[in-house]
Image (cartoon, rainbow, N blue to C red):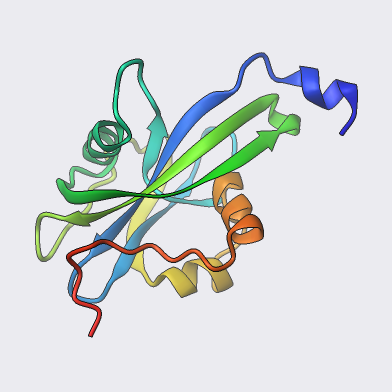
Length: 157
């Protein structure tokens, strides 16, 4: 890495990405970004960690703000390092997994300037057939290929 790459971002920010799991089929909530860095890429709900906020609090707040879904059983998944020199940004992304409280969740697009739509798809569909991925998901695929979003109470049989 060059010295220019090390100094391009003014600060490293912490983001929280949320694998929101629909219990009946273990599908996850995915959207398509718009109007911001990563425009046109596939994303999870999530956002910036606020001061003094836990990962779980951030996940619940962001998913409510973006899709009007309530969460339960929020658990830590993994972390990625996501430099984005072209956008002059650098994030560390904390991935968590959570279940929807509702058995039949109906996500709303609450920030239409930031997201085209929300849909539930399988994790495999996201990682193999949806491109381009937002940088944190791209980093996850590259650095944690065996990672799978799971929650403790989901029946996997």
